[in-house]
Image (tube, rainbow over all chains, first blue to last red):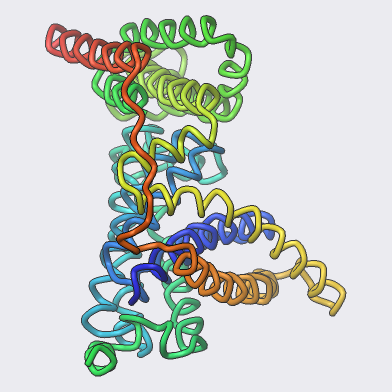
Length: 191
Length: 226
């Protein structure tokens, strides 16, 4: 993919993340849907541009909620995982897309919980705190108590996000699909 | 930005709530000197609920508590207090930087680190409002066509997709046009004139010194407590 296109795709990916998250909140959806831009950038441009999109998203997002800057690590890891999978297997077939979705759905809450436990003490100020408090009271460690409620929402959120991106990628012209069109197609396009 | 990074690392490694309170007082003094004290204090509202929840939940449910006052554990309360004060220190440091530094200065800083990074940051600051406007237009158009945004989760999810996909497609088309514009404006050309880097002023050296001082003190306090 042309470097100029990569440079302008990253801000669009960041915008998709920001607006996606805002729209999910305003529609009161029980999922975040704020990594679609990172996944899209990573699938098309590869792991490094995907990681950059994820990292800058959280830095920009911290203008509204400063403590969220730490969660940039989660978004960066999502970009890297999707980027590497897309670079090797493409992002148009169900198998690699589902694989990417499951991997990031497990890895994201692990890293997210580690950060949330240190920065927020495992709490977020939302309704989920009741479950966390209950699990802590039942004798679970703070990490386990805040990881369990996150895992369920992340599974739905991330798998939904990767499939949304898969449909967007399929709708794009081949010239704009980049790594997502698959290794063989990318190689033949490069030749 | 250097001062912010040093402040965030300092807030992460300071081991006691007393040390963190001293750090917050320093931050507030800096805000007072810069004339942004009330704006920085306002920022505490964003994490107020979380801080209160931390105190109550940790005092009530923290598994390591051994001494209790009524149903609240002392050790849990102190643990909650440490995390709540650390969170306030993070938020204060971030807002101090954000209020004291405008978007132009942030873009210039990014461009000084790497030219392409500067382009990405400046494009992002321009793209997000444009995409927001595009989302508003799409939302109005879809609502006129009868799109329901209330009801079951499935219905809301359908509404989400109906709203976000047109915005993404429009944005990708605009991105393609922006890439063409960059080519027209000479991006990547060896004959392009690049802006020179400004030399560091006394204020810049003072900020670097303050950042290093904060970090050094935090490391010393952390080592002394251990």
